[in-house]
Image 1 (tube, rainbow, N blue to C red):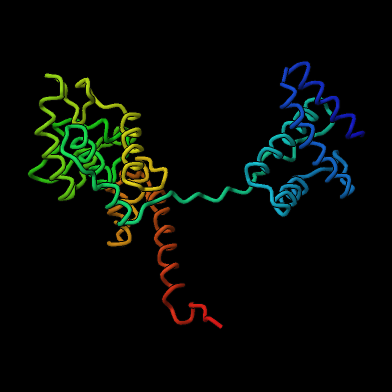
Image 2: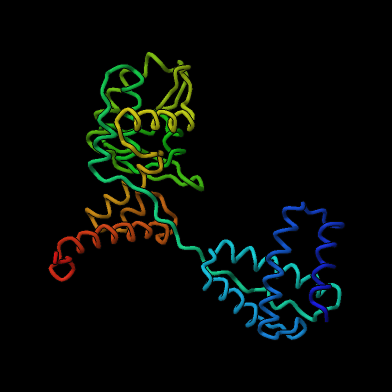
Length: 298
């Protein structure tokens, strides 16, 4: 079985029948040549190829420093190529089926520390837009809301005497979460000024200059503006305030279940990402403070 001829036949199939672009064909050619080179080095015939050999190919890619995404792309190319050979009776089965690339490391969400949050939320001014934005940002951080949840709030969802807000989250699930003292103060000021801005029948808690429900992109733009004005020096987005809320709550309380409920996570495994952030914080403190961890100056 001439593997190089089989590869050229497959590439012609992709070009002539599948009509793939030259760029995509080039990627397939490169990935599959690397796979066939691996088989040649190991004296592995395609007819004798098994899933162990395919996994070893993925492992070799990993040892060479390829990212999980790149390895997954190569395995996908191999899987499709071998599937083509099975369809054309050049192989009995496809040993690449079921071989998975290593899972990518989960990126930890960016957060702000408490001083950074305080600096960001210290909005100066009493004009209507500043009052509205202060209430929005305070509520985002105070209650750990998603951006979609914030702009979806109606006036009736806010219970100022009870200091809570009813939120409709993913999957149309509702939850009631507490609202902090500073957010309550900011919201009271906004509600006083909202009357003059909102359309008569508008139910939204936060409204635009037109008097209608505020759009998510407007909240993003206003936060970006305030981050620049406050000298944050960071690319801050609304979800960063939610991440910061979760991290600070977990650092203070250690109650993972409570944080899960407040965030509206269906699974606690989603909330557990914040335990890794908390551990990083603790590890940094340990490195700086523990007598067995501190570096001694020579």
